Length: 212
Image (cartoon, rainbow, N blue to C red):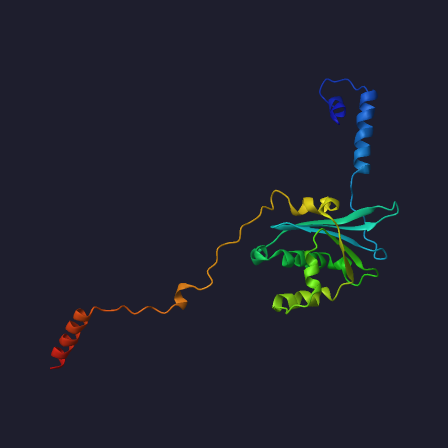
């Protein structure tokens, strides 16, 4: 696009601003001014959170509706699951993604005037509508979510291509869980060896001879 402008500054090239140079300049100007740029957050407006997870990572876009009636991004996030998080089942990964997004953007999402609309393409989060006995990790998640005002909205996969692209980047490959041993060797007692009767008798007799 900018090649006609580069040609103008080449050595021994006469300066001639013609139609093609003007078109190149206008094309660059339009590309810069119309490109997707981050908007400034407005605490008085509702926040929209688009989230998606893959086997190895999460992707999300934080947006607000602007004067043109369209959602404009405030920030993007693409993050790999770490350590034990990679071994979580789908229900846990989907919920963990939302929790990590609230933690990452807490400066915007704490104490909002309007509910934060969380768009996700998975129905697996409905798993958490039922009563469960929480472990320590789930109890901590429950306490963290209690501090936010939000609503979860199901969004089919075809309508959530933007966060999908962030959660399925080529550098976020699916990492197979490392093999782990539940019971290590030291927890097993040594098995006593069964000594042949003849050898045992010889040792007993040798011990008696030493005593006598």
